[in-house]
Image (cartoon, rainbow, N blue to C red; front, side, top):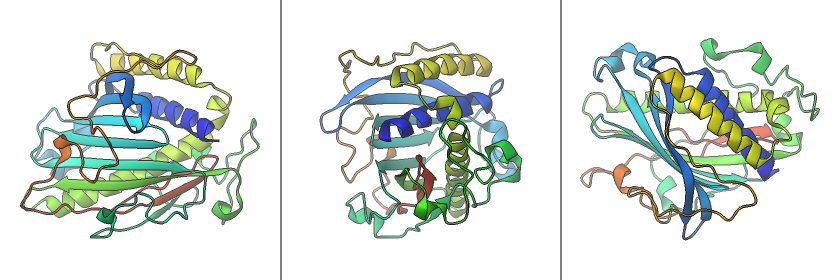
Amino acid sequence: MPLQYRVGQLYTISKHSHQESEKGEGVEVVKNEPHEDPVHGPGQFTEKRVHLSSKLPSWARAVTPRIFYITEKAWNYYPYTITGKCSFLPKFSIYIETKYEDNCGDSENIFHSDKILGDHEISFLDIAFDEIPERYYRSLEDPRYFSSVKTGRGPLREGWREHTKPVMCSYKLVTVKFEVWGLQTRVEQFVHKVIRDILLIGHRQAFAWVDEWCGMTMEEVRKYERETQEATNEIIGVVTPSISISQVGQAPVTHSAPASAPSTPLSDDPPDFLSAPKDRPRKKSAPETLTLPALRERANAE
């Protein structure tokens, strides 16, 4: 089941990014290459630019440049990943740790760290019955009505998390910082809401698109990922980057870590590019849970 979840995750991210991209807006892939970590072993490093000027609310556009994007750097050592997002706005960053487990989201303090014991909020996300923004709702992607031809999964009924098998959980520890006086609380709350919506929408799609990716090998989904990323970059209007994809059955290619990559992601400190100012403690959030059959995500929100 871990492999099936991973394939579905890679497929869904690529397809969703392509669907949401248009001229000058969307997810630009800058790097996608193998990466070796001394603790977690072989993985994948990706760097993306999320162009979203027109998608910001009016109050946010008033304080951002006309051309605005967020840089996302991620180190994926499945079943553990670390993701950092920052922009050229001063003192703004998002830091996310993720762990995947074959359970129903009942692991306590899965990150084994005191940093989730402070100012935080825990939320459990239900992909079938939690509300999503109306503009993103599609009846064909509603888990309450979808039924998979290939797997027989769905539709999901009340209480599905307790009795549906197989099931996986992805635990997320999310930290959002925007240290600008007068806007900090508003921006941080807005970003946590956006992250929650992204997790819900993404996993609803992963569940509803299962007949498209079920049965794909890692080699096949990496090929799909590469082709989709190239097409997405072309839509946005950027030069297609050179993308290196790991091949199944070949010895892993190793690269030295990017300057900003944490040598050991499990350390208590985030990468340098996300380090908090020394004169103010970071606000932290604890794991939040999102469950789905065969695919289950637990996410944090503050």
